[in-house]
Amino acid sequence: MRKTIMALTMVVGLASAACGDSEPAKGVGAPEAESEAETELTVVASDFGFDLGGVGSVAPGEIQLTLENEGKQSHEAQLYRLNEGINFEQFAAAATEGETTRLPAEALAMATPGRGVTSNVDPGDSITVPAPVEAGSYAFVCHILDPESLSPHYALGMVAPLEVG
Image (cartoon, helix red, strand yellow):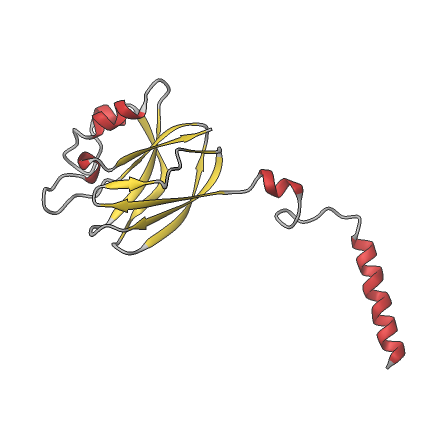
């Protein structure tokens, strides 16, 4: 029994020594894991606005985007990348002219739809999705119609800016 324990100890020791020269796995103590870490961003939706918790910008790369719905209606948070030379105020002003779930042509001409939370999130629920973003200016938009006014949520002010870079 004693010889078996000693033999196992030697095998484990040799295996550890043999593995000692290899690089650590990505994400497990590797220096690269820190620089390539994903950004987590929580956006809280209410009727009719987004709260980014004071976050105005994130680093380029993949963000883990969580949409928490604290409103009484369903919401979404689709990301639009604003075209070069367009600022958030211009985009938001054009968006408020919308009357359907599709953004007005003027707003669509100012931005490229991207990822984000594009499915309905019911009141009290949340969802997390990956959202790769490049450097630039973005806007969160909710396209869902308000059942009372029949206006899209973005026309009621449910747009919010995000800078990447």
